[in-house]
Amino acid sequence: MNKAASLLENKKKFLILGCGFSGSFFAKTIRELGCNALTSSRSEKKDPNSFVFNSECGKVPDEKIFDGVTHILSCIPPDKNGNDPVLVSLKSKLQNLPLEWVGYLSTTGVYGNTEGDWVSELDQPNPFQKRSQNRLNCEKKWIDSGLPVQIFRLPGIYGPGRSTFEAIRNQKIRIISKKNQVFSRIHVADITNAIIYLIQNKASLKFHQIINIADDEPCSQIEVIKYCYDLLGLKMPKPILFEEAKKELSPIAKSFWMENRRVSNKLLCKTLGYKLIYKNYKIGLKNCFLNS
Ligand SMILES: NC(=O)c1ccc[n+]([C@@H]2O[C@H](COP(=O)([O-])OP(=O)(O)OC[C@H]3O[C@@H](n4cnc5c(N)ncnc54)[C@H](OP(=O)(O)O)[C@@H]3O)[C@@H](O)[C@H]2O)c1
Image (cartoon, rainbow, N blue to C red):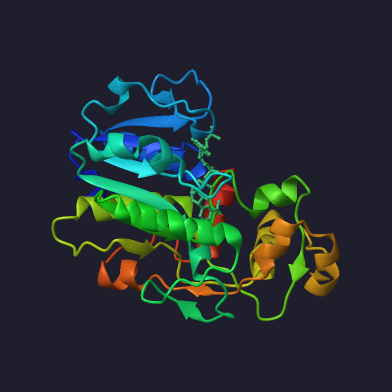
C-alpha cells in the first residue's frame, strides 16, 4: 500500500455493501489501514464484521450498523428489474447520515461499442445492452440522490482467485479469436488502491463524480490467454474463430463479444495523479500466478 493510503485516518467507518470479489478486497485493505469496515452479504456469515442486506427479500441492516458510518462503497449490481438494490432499500436512510463520501462501482459497459476506439468520461455514454442501460439509469439515480457520490466505471475485473488461470485450471476456458477485438481490464488491487488514493487526497484533488479505473493496455483476449498458458508452461490450444464459436455461446457470453472499446484512464492517472500498481495484464497476471 502506498504512503498516501497509509495516512488514512483510522477514525473512519466504512460500510461495504456487497462483499463479493471487489468488496472483500477493499474491506481487507481498508482494515489493514486501521479503518473500521463492515460488509454486507445476502446470507448470514460467521464473520462478526458481516451483516445481512438482501434487497430481493427486503432484508435491511439493523439500525446499529449505521452508527458512526462516514464512508459507503456499493459494489452491488442492478437487480433483475434494473433497479439499484441500495437506493431502492436504503436511499432515505443514507440521505440522513452525515456521510463524508460514497462510492459506487459501475461498469464501462455504459459506453457501449466504440469499434475499438478510446473512450473517456467526456464521451456520452451509449449503452448497447439492456443491462448497460439499466446500469446507466442506476448511475443517474446515484447522482440524483444528492449523496457525495463518486462513480467508478470498471472494465473486466481480475485478481488472485479470479483470472484466466482459474478458467484454464477448471477447463472453462474458451479460446476465441475475433479480428481487431480488444478488451480493457483492471486488477482488483488497483480498484481498491485508486479509491483509497482519491479518498485520501479528497481535499487537494478536484472532485470528479465519474471516473474510469482501467489499466494502460487494452488488448485482445488471446494475448492474455497465451500469456497465462506460457506462465503455466503449457501449450495453448488452437483458437476458434468467433464466427464459429458464437453458435455455442450463451447470450451473455455473446454480448460480451459485441462490444469493442479501449477505456481511457487519463483522468485518473494523468489529471488526478494515481499510479497504477498493475499497468498491464502481464504484471497483473504475474501477481495472480504467484498468489493462486
Ligand atoms: N466482474 C467484473 O468483471 C465487473 C466488471 C465491471 C463492473 N463490475 C461491477 O462492479 C461491481 C463489483 O463487481 P464484483 O465482480 O466484485 O461483484 P461480485 O463479486 O459479483 O459481488 C456482488 C455483491 O453484490 C451482492 N448482491 C447482489 N445482489 C444483491 C442484492 N439484491 N441485495 C444485496 N446484495 C446483493 C452480492 O451478495 P452475496 O455476497 O451474498 O452474493 C455480492 O456481495 C458490481 O456492480 C459489478 O457488476 C464487475
